[in-house]
Length: 115
Length: 114
Image (cartoon, rainbow over all chains, first blue to last red; front, side, top):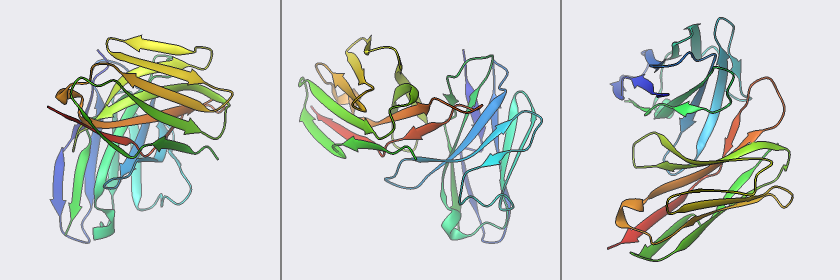
């Protein structure tokens, strides 16, 4: 149980385009979802926290207009990287928690490469 | 602001050795602490979770300890195997706030040589 999926697993795009990444909780209702970014050889950095049906809370230094987060249902959250640039190339990982518990279940990650 | 540090950054050991990975955190007001494993290019696998009221947790060859007052945790791996090779991350879950947020260390990259 407690499986979280991400799609796509890998995406390559041209600079200036927008990319959408999906995060799904497959067997539980995720009241809260988290989005992290991980640069090579570095740890995970929290980008934003989203609760179902409300606006996401962004960490300091994360541009909310560039990284659009939608959490419209209890099983799906999306992260859209708008007007992507090479410096946005990174490994994006989502996690989900719900059902009153605090445990976060992590997705397998999405590797974004912006050319 | 919570800061999590992991030492060493990388570790290479021969198969069969017992080893200890270290994690320290600056703010002792934590809800729990987790150890994760991350294989290259993959997501995170949760290994052990220690609640703030607990001192240790065990799962198979893994044992994690927590000393909240001193801001330290260790992950002990017994009889290491090549399949244990991965990056090990510790993360602390903060005690306050409506959403539990994890702060991660930068990880220890472990290589177990056959």
